[in-house]
Image (tube, rainbow, N blue to C red; front, side, top):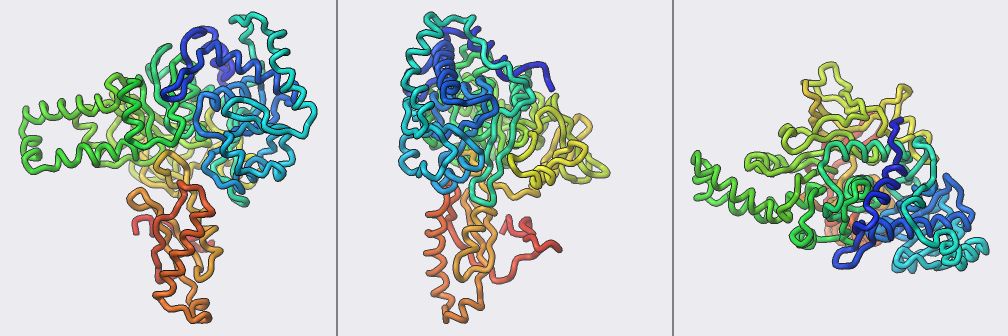
Length: 550
């Protein structure tokens, strides 16, 4: 366990950056660090009055916003456990996560609340609005009383709030801070248990390796309910004293670029898709022209052209950033090579929710082409291979960043973390003499959505496989769209006298029904008929890797 405490980072930043603007929604006036403290302390009085104890769970369900961040900070600083839930899930899955997490309070966007049936979450004693912190509903007299007397109790406790009042819970670093759900469907719910120590280790590493200072502007557009966006677009910059501008709605690349130009962020975090779209739409058409290819091959001339392209690209991202950190999925090799050739300041990171999330990283000027950086200082990373430099093996790791396990799922925890504490990532790679990690493949099946959402094809397949005329399916990603390969049920077709033409029509109706059941980011764009049974392992698992390029 590291000596630095997550709550200590929060307390210190608030005290040192008292009057600096901390969090704001895009195009709106934000909160200073002092105002954040006021709201946090008010929520602490509410939690106590509502009977919330350290270790109790509080669910947070809403779009990215400054208020979302305040609720998150207040919960972990109180010593309760925050359960941030991706708002894109269907109501049924949201209800399942809330119940599975044993949450006692729920903070929810007003629009999302309208779609929930709170009678199906019996452990919830109070529902509060993320939009304005008001009490939406409660059948618990203690919660009602705590809310109605909140202003009076706060005024009495803090008549003149000052920095000496900023002393939150002294909860130990080894206690649970977050349960992060990577999926929501019944039977697939998997809550990653992230401790205060896991988050503190990520923050400490970022402070020591990613240059920011108080007042620096940042743009947050990744989903805050996921650990990548939460740790590096929110918790880390907040611990420094930065001003974080939050794009509250799921933003298009155009909106993101516009925000970059206006805010001029000092550090940029992104998933590959946003950067690849810029490369594909803005750069590739230019550098692929015949005359440009000739010019780029001429020594001296190519240096001038590379500088012009680099300067234009830097301007696209606001012009003031130290570096652009890409993570969450593999980066397009052609884009990576070109950005490296022109000297663009970017680097690759590698992580996963179970590490809160960082595993490896290297700054833009020390990163090695094709690698995902070097292991962070709080992790031991190795390749399960007789020759880690040349023979691909599974990436395994242990250390301060590793989760304690999956909530209420000992079986899944045991499959992930062995008796010696090594976490088996399911990813395949190599490590060179300098410690650079090269990811060569994913033995796990997770697909990264366009806005950074984790997509688990098994969840989609479970819905598809229950439909008529389908034996089984495999969901793959192609051109940033989800496609389902369908192995049809020939016996059922014969029984019902269904022709091939009729099957195509039926499957199109089925596809729409499946999409109605799933979050929008998990929508399947096409069903493609696969004529043979999918190849299986001896355990009858589909050999998914055979179909990912189909």
